[in-house]
Amino acid sequence: MPSTAAFAETAALMGDPARASMLTALMDGRALTAGELALAAGITPQTASGHLGRLATAGLLSVERQGRHRYYRLASPAIARMLEGIMAVAAGPADPPGPVRVGPRDHALRQARTCYDHLAGRLAVAMADRMVERGQIELSPDGGAVTEAGARFLQELGIGLEPAARRRGRVFCRPCLDWSERRPHIAGAVGAALCSGCFARGWLRRVEGSRAVAITPGGRLALERAFGLELG
Amino acid sequence: MPSTAAFAETAALMGDPARASMLTALMDGRALTAGELALAAGITPQTASGHLGRLATAGLLSVERQGRHRYYRLASPAIARMLEGIMAVAAGPADPPGPVRVGPRDHALRQARTCYDHLAGRLAVAMADRMVERGQIELSPDGGAVTEAGARFLQELGIGLEPAARRRGRVFCRPCLDWSERRPHIAGAVGAALCSGCFARGWLRRVEGSRAVAITPGGRLALERAFGLELG
DNA sequence: CGAATGCTTCGGCCGGGACCGAAACGCCGG
DNA sequence: CCGGCGTTTCGGTCCCGGCCGAAGCATTCG
Image (cartoon, rainbow over all chains, first blue to last red; front, side, top):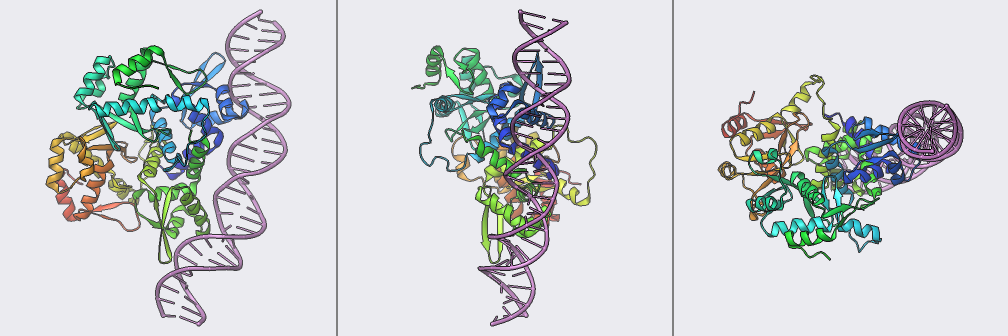
């Protein structure tokens, strides 16, 4: 067995509120400095340093020195998937017992954000829905795949899927449960390609100091046109 | 957000060694009594009772009273997927720094066992490999699916996939990283159907007091024939 | 009906670890 | 070369939570 000890150690590492805050703050896939993470967790820098050191030696985070800053990021997609899995459970099966109090910042987050290497929020769920409706992708709780029509669609958009994914058989994608919408959006290689494509075309840009992403004016037109959406 | 507090609480719940032992003991999908779980965790019944109560109220476990016993099981497939995710990380990317000491019991576990609702171990990985070779399923890190040939194969075996899975488009399956083989085996609805099918036909049976499953003499012949395996 | 079994509740002990203040270390700017 | 800033290390305090012994309920059996 992976010695239940290792399991417990990993889980305990995520079980501290301060460390949990840092990890979820990193779930958008960016690299943040130790100071930013301390702020996000609401603790002093020296305490944060200790936590970050432990997370890094455990292999959950990777460090990158740049000048006098130290940038931390999730060490691998496997880490992100693990965090996703916990969030799906922690959100609870019947979370919405009424419209939760949401501030304006929360509103932006629910509209569109990144989830490690792909998109999430209302926008991402709507994109997934439309692609399913149009027969461009198929989604099920167990997995999903791009259809021929979907492959053409992505090619027209200029969103290339790396040949490694296309080599053997069909291009699979992974459903990822959106915590704000409680419905699946597109993750995996396809989700990552869609996300980076939207940024590369200037359709989306990151909001300073937040995990949210904003839809640019041009991006709004392009997304509405490409995906047949009506973005409020 | 699912308030990082909920995230931390869930993770902390799994982060205690005793609770981690109980959860991994339940990963084979069976329901165990409080006493059995106490034994598995190496703690006294009264301590275990406290832990189990907390896990149940948190929604990770479900309880079922039966006479003077109390049977605990994982509350949902989502819980199992979450645990899988942590195990994949906790096992580490470079776990095999040499052939680990394995006892005879460990050997049986590595040969064949259940992983919540599907099969794992050398047997399950070999089955997945052969089905991929034969073009019966396609697998990638992001997902997988049953091909037409695979659907025929399963039908010939008499392993029916519930119509719900077949209704819309293709039947997807989910790859699950095997902790002993470090390679994927088949999970999801397809994996669950394969597993229950093997038990129903008497090809496999559970080993008393262990998560391992044994291949029956008849099952060995049937599996070798159906999947083209050579079971040592 | 009383004894044995499985499980839970209560009370008290004790250790691990999270936290911060103070101070040292590297890096950049003037 | 020296002062500011981001980060880490050290030391000490304090509290949360896991653990068990003893006792209390429920259920089954003799």
